[in-house]
Length: 273
Ligand SMILES: Nc1ncnc2c1ncn2[C@@H]1O[C@H](COP(=O)(O)OP(=O)(O)OP(=O)(O)O)[C@@H](O)[C@H]1O
Ligand SMILES: [Mg+2]
Image 1 (cartoon, rainbow, N blue to C red):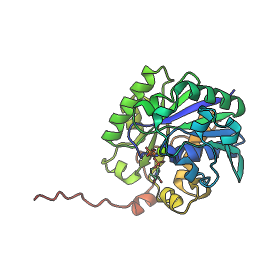
Image 2: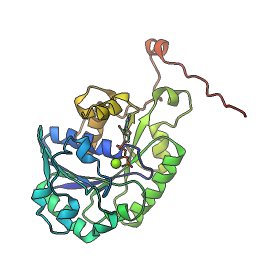
Image 3: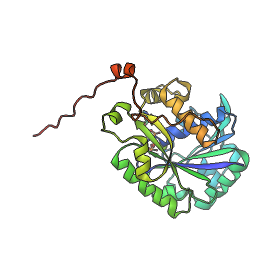
Image 4: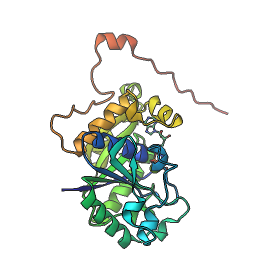
């Protein structure tokens, strides 16, 4: 049976598109037929993250408005045939995508793929609400470990609930082991407890992720902490048994050897004028 996932957040720029692209690739490498829908109408980025920016002919809105067939708009990744993208339109406005048309497209995609991942726009307005329908089977909220992001994630969780969506699970992104250990940053478990949501995954703030973007590569093709985290999240989403336990960044006791090389924090000095 096919599963459609919403990947949402409250605040923008917290890693929704990165997580969606990487988790999609991890799932495809495990043999699942995966379709990523770029739901960020007017601000597409999945094509660039997947290296498909020169391959777009038709987009989601063209399919919704009947300008092309669904199959014509789907783009397959050259080196991973099991992963396809339904790109967003670059110049349209979110209100042009009719919720009914989107639901019908999603229903058809669920017949063609094992997993459909919907990369949502930031915020809680019409652009997000229009993507929520009864074809959605599961939701992920991406959150960074700060009060503003948690507050906005709470609002989004409320919108999902009011729209009858399944209870989201949370992925905490951009964690810093040392800051958590020093008590300056919330741990992933604390963020999940504050939101009263199940913790699906935790990802370190990893310089390799941005470097991968700069060099037009996928973080999934680089051996780094984040790559391992994306893989763990994908495995949990696929319900594959025996996945590594959550790492609990910043909360586990360090060995004496690690303690020796643990970086020390510089004090944050306030400048009084
Ligand atoms: N774990 C991470 N470590 C380091 N950089 C990261 C990490 N996750 C995401 N980033 C960087 O953060 C930036 C924003 O990520 P991304 O575009 O995925 O966020 P988004 O939530 O989709 O944003 P928007 O709300 O605009 O759609 C990107 O430059 C990405 O490379
Ligand atoms: Mg995005």
